[in-house]
Length: 230
Image (spheres, one colour):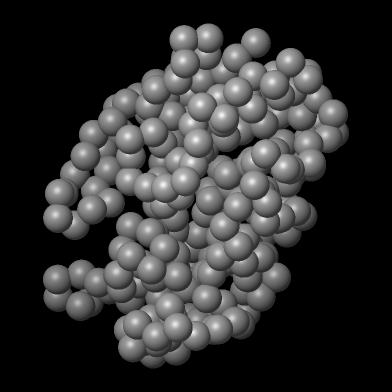
């Protein structure tokens, strides 16, 4: 699912690092599953959590109701999109991200300058590709602080970045890093995508990434990093 800050572009580079020592039947857990663009490339036992109900609703729609999703911008129009905020459309979670500029929740109807692209159709084609890879994924709405994690799991975190565009302005980064330390002490393998981390976290991978999520400011560059803690 299209989602702001998606790791789809770098998944093939960082997943081999994250899964390098994965054992048989070891669970893979994402506390911030977002658009599911990492977890859909992992096999085996998986749970994707997110505190945002709309995120989980969107992924469950792709997993369970692919044939019922709108397939083009005649089945779901710009006017339908404008009315999303104030209605209970059954696939609101999916539409609110997949049809929005930059994958930001209700961030504006996706369009190109000449109105030639059908973004609803593109989103549906992406959902068709994703649905087969998430059929056995468990998706649950929950805060990272309260999630259930099976013993000695692999935990991959893609939290709201410190100092970046806020899609959860109340997120407490100090609590998050302490939570990661605690999970590592419990025997889990913890990996975090971020630009910066406390000094006790180790950089395993880094790469400059160009993004253009904001129409007004254009492209932005940042050094994506993958951290862990022992």
